[in-house]
Length: 90
Image (cartoon, rainbow, N blue to C red; front, top):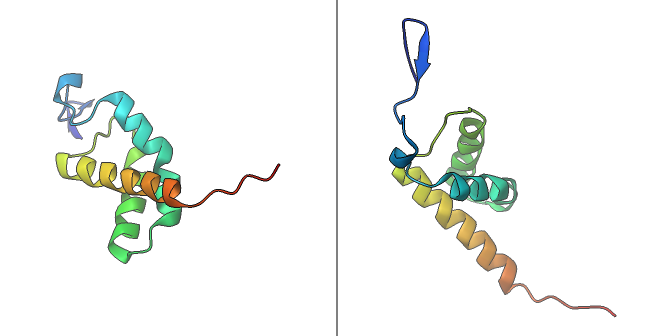
């Protein structure tokens, strides 16, 4: 974020400039705590926590590379959850 004459603005001024839609970003961030709990790799853990901290900023939008990695991590988490065998007890 840049500051000029006490007016704050972001690099991406329009919604059309965003890499992911607001709905997609909301979905990713909603599932992000689950990703943070399940990740085992050191690099992925640091990435997950950095994204979580950045997501707290109101005008933050992920870069193209960040969005791609985030989508992949959420997709892998969903795939891992569906791979587990669920036993229903009646």
